[in-house]
Amino acid sequence: MIDRREFGRLLGGAALTAAGASWIGAPALAKGAARIVIVGGGAGGGTVARILKTEAPNLHVTIVEKRDIYTSCFNSNHFFGGFRTFASLQHSYDGLRKLGIEVLNETATDVDPAKKTVKLSAGERLPYDQLVLSPGIDFNYGAIEGYSATAAEIMPHAWKAGPQTLLLMKQLESMDDGGVVIMTVPDNPYRCPPGPYERACMIAHYLKTHKPKSKLVIFDAKRMFSKQAAFEEAFDKYYSGIIDLNLTNEIDDFRVVRVDPKALEVETASGTKLKGAVVNVIPPQTAGDIAIAAGCAGANGWCPIKPANFASALVDGIHVIGDAAIANDMPKSAYSANSQGRVVAADILAALAGAEPVAARYRNTCWSLLAADDSIKIGADYTPGEKDGKPLLVPHGPFVSQAHETAAMRRKNYEEGLAWYHAIIADAFNDNTALMHKG
Image (tube, rainbow, N blue to C red; front, side, top):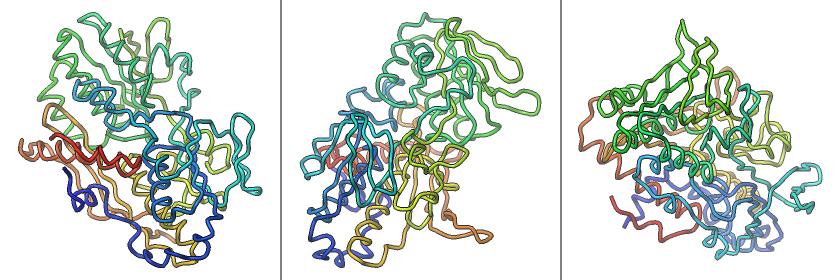
């Protein structure tokens, strides 16, 4: 069982302590008139909803989420390596409903900031007093010739967990031993910067243990990547001869610009062509469609925010958290979304109560599994600041795993990552049974 101190540490500490008691019994909260709508029921949106309803039970809190079961993208790579079952990634919204939170399994299609309404796919308009957008990502299919939602059913991205995760695993299982797996990795920014390289380890682990004649070829649009030294050490230590990593350099641009789903072929910007038995295309990404429809996204497809509270920098009266937001050096991760959600919940409660806003602090940690009992991590704390007169998030105390660390340290990272997974599920979905875990 994770004790409460460990629980708080893994989640970066509570964001609600500064204003605390000033909310209890405040007129705006006691009346229960405020309507909070949260679009997106993942690690960020669920966290906001749970905290708001727990701290102010009279609030009317609604989550709009098209999925009736949440499948976590974080830790989904473990499924490919055989370290986690698919069922263990799936979580219901029953815990949030038990708190009195309304969960609508529908799609939000538009936002009217002037009238303060969210339009649903069925045509209904939900009124709100406070709106939080936590829609995650969508894909810029046009960035790769030949790639589309239809092509993704042949060349899965699996960068939204669920059916795509199962599809990619099924293709790996069906592939003949000796087949080539191709993975394409986009340029920054995208969801979970270390994610493709953890996936590479997990797919390579599957190949090593089930199809040792096969190999994984990676075409990467970048010159360098998160936790690179530790990942490259793992590629050599565990998966030598299996992983073929191709980073963009001065001579070759390994950014994939064209795919042929029928031929299972990819082509890079420098003209390299390769056919695979399984092709995992991770395409360039944007903020979720609803954030763009609401006018919260800039020209680059991501949503700029105000560092003090993750309010939209473009549209008044809307908070944007999680992968849809662009937050300087704070990466797109479930930990980040949870941390941002805590601050946003505190900010909304303070505003409704007429209290001073809580001084924001954020945290991120990202664990990546390399092999059995071997995990690495990266992270930092973040506080609002400014540079050259512009507001931004300032990182503090950054840390990253290095090559040649001890087995005991890597084992500790692995256990810590497992504990965090169950802690964040409990925090975001009010699922206290998830606090039980095996190291």
